[in-house]
Length: 157
Image (cartoon, rainbow, N blue to C red; front, side, top):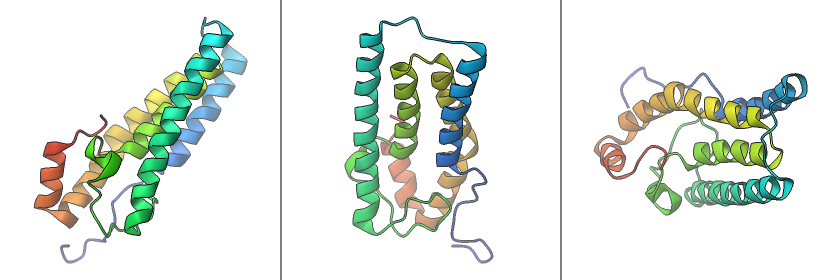
């Protein structure tokens, strides 16, 4: 690490709060504006459940990878290790991906178009305003190892 640079990513947005807020905003918009998806209940609930199960499995795998290395999942803390195994072989950001999928799953299950839209918008905010700061930090911290990881593994999927 360079002298004078803190050993943590320069991230001003807390992604879990952003995604949770998106869910709440989606519920509020639906209550006042409408925006029900035209799906049969069985399709909506079944499809939403499948998306949610996949999202929670992905989140569990990502959190387990952090726990195995003694890392914390808080995005504003220093990294001790570069995670490249498990679900990180397929996505550099499986937790953020799972948060978008959780929003989409809830949106489908509740037939709420607004939740799906706010989940996607939250994903875009994270993509453009959070991940670049985290990537810059990880490149400073892990150098060539992180650059090679970026070449092998896509940001989302």
